[in-house]
Amino acid sequence: MEVYNLFYGAVYLFTGLWTGSFLNVCVWRFPRRLSPIKGRSSCPRCGHALSPGDLVPVFSWLFLRGRCRYCHRPISRRYPLTEALTGLVFLLCFYVFGAGFQSVPACLFASALIAAAWIDWDFTYIPDGISLFILLAGLISFIPLPACGLLTRFSWGSLGDHVVAAVLIGSALFIVSRLTGGGIGGGDIKLLAAAGFYLGLPRGLLAMLGGYILAAVWVAPALLRGKIHRRSSIPMAPFFAVSLILSLLWGEQLLIWYLNLVFCRGV
Image 1 (tube, rainbow, N blue to C red):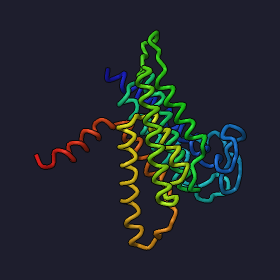
Image 2 (cartoon, rainbow, N blue to C red):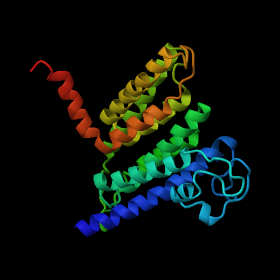
Image 3 (cartoon, one colour):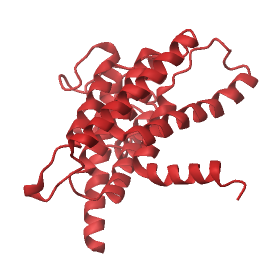
Image 4 (spheres, rainbow, N blue to C red):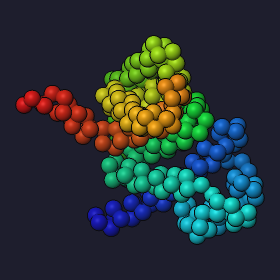
């Protein structure tokens, strides 16, 4: 069993590192209306096409000391950070869900959230394609494959519950947006509705609440230091992404902890 865990852990980590490298391409190209699968990767500074040796996740950046091999200008730490983060999330998905089919949509879900977080951070918008991708990951997670020993959570009742979760979470955020005069963008509403479909109502609501708490923790000091103002546009996807991934991995434990905190304080 120990060898099994080490082997599959390495497979998931390796796959996550390369997926993170692909996410870097998506984050750069999606906002520029470029295909992530057409054309060779190039240096974002000088535009020189990169060789295969320049594209090894994390290690190429470390070997080149964070600089382009051709123009020698610095390359953002975001690239190895995204690769390492995605590798870590894939590894955690393996340890939480195992090496079976259930971990596949979980990894897809987390990957989409990482891409959405960076794009929203840079451009304060979330491509609709990412929300649709999350919906697809949610549908995949309902596919029953008993012949392969991969029976997932499929049942018409369960599927209906998740549809209701998406509608309720999306409607709640839409009402918040109307009441606050656009305090939350349409991209965030679609992202959270799609994530609600994947996670279900309890974990979806927990993630929504957690995202707002994380945003408040970041915004309050920034307001006090004068780095942002009350009318500044705040990209919410990074905070929602962190909260959603935590809910994906440890949603039940977090729900139990939260309910104990709320209802058992006086006991």
